[in-house]
Every structure is written in structure tokens, then in C-alpha cells.
Image (cartoon, rainbow, N blue to C red; front, top):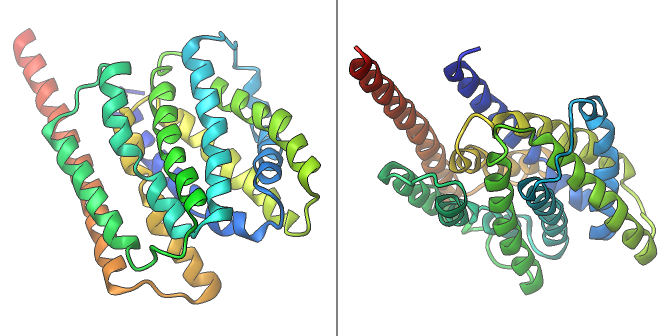
Length: 290
């Protein structure tokens, strides 16, 4: 398959990833257990999904693989803790400061230059997210907000170091990250407390929300830039209130709808302009060869 076709599949995979990730906040709050137990338990369950891919892994133990695995482990743990300690709106907004961190990290780690298009779209997405959740901001707790902000940084690290393995197998980092959570976080969670209910939601968190989503993400990150992986998955905080509405009947306000439209518009604009940019680049290359 040509790279253009793989890129289109990668975009579709990232949209699917965002849809699966978006049910995380609601499910985490439905599991009556501490953050360590939830993070470790769902990672142990997710490993069942990754079993068929283990045969394809060589585990090269490179710095990039280990950095991505650690970033993965920290992101899932921090976001779980944030959802337990602050509002879902605060947790999602603060995690999606990730594009800002990606811009800083990608230029140094990946040598991927940020264009004016990238910067404009990141600014638009940030403004849209602020509008989207501004009516839900407040009522959070300081520690939970700090954890969510930290998860934004580790999420950016995950995108960057997964992308850096585009010529290897990013799934190795995902498997190692889940194994790390299962071995370290689960015993701590069991020592702190026992689950009090909602284990059926933990099963869905592991198999679907974490397992299936990272199969898609591991494929996609090899064919699009680190910034694109974060911008496309920014659909997650837009979908989250949809599930909340279906579950509880809570309706988003006018500002939230406006912010959502801005974010969707910016994501679509970025995809269109990037495709046009790639097409112009290929046309120039073809002309130069001719």
C-alpha cells in the first residue's frame, strides 16, 4: 500500500482511537477503586488484547522504546488519578495542553519543523477547547488539576517517542507500558484498598478503551506526524460530553457547542491544508525529476 493510502488509514485509525478514549472518563468514575488499582487492573486486562502482537515484537530495548513505555505508563496513571480527584472537564482540558508540549518536543527530538499552519491550528484548537469546557471549569481540586496537566506533558512525550519509532514497532512500547502498570500499580492498588464495585466497567476499560484503542494508535503513529496524532485525537474531549449526555441527560451549553465547532473546524482545516502541502511537495519533486 502506498504511503498516501496508509496516511488516510492512519487518520481513520486516530479518529477511532479518539472515540474509544472518549469513554474513559465516564468509565473511570464508574469503577469504585483507587487510581493505582484501576490503572494496573485495566492494563493487565489490556495485555490480553496485545497477546497476538507479541510474536511480532523483538523488544530492542532502545531509549525511544523505554521512554515511550514510561510515558504511556505515566499518562494512564496520571489521567486516572486526575479523573478521580477533579472534574472530568478539567482533566480532559488540561491533558489536551499536549499539542503545546508536542511543538516544543518534536522540534528537538524528531526534528519535525512546525509550520505556520501547525501553529495556527494549535492556537485555534486551544481556544476552542477553552470555550468548550469553560462552563464546566471549576469545582475541580488542585491536586487533580496538577495531575491532569502532568498527563498532558507525558501524553506529548508518548506521541513524540512513539513517532520516533516509526521505522520500528511502537507496539513494543505499549506492551511494555501496560506490563509496567500491571506489575507496579496493581499491587499498590490492592494494598491500598479492594475494588468496591464496577468491575464490569474495568473490563471494558481494559479490553476496549485501552486495548483496542492502542492497537489503532500504534499503527497510526507510524504514518502521521506527532502533532497530527495529538490534533486528531483532540476529538476525545468533544465526544466525552456526548456519552455523558446519553448516560445522564446533561446537555452542553452554547459556549461548549461553539468551542466544539471551532475544534472540529481546526482539525479538518489542518488535515486539508497538510494534504495540499504534501501534494504540492510531491508535484515539485516530480517536476524536478522530469
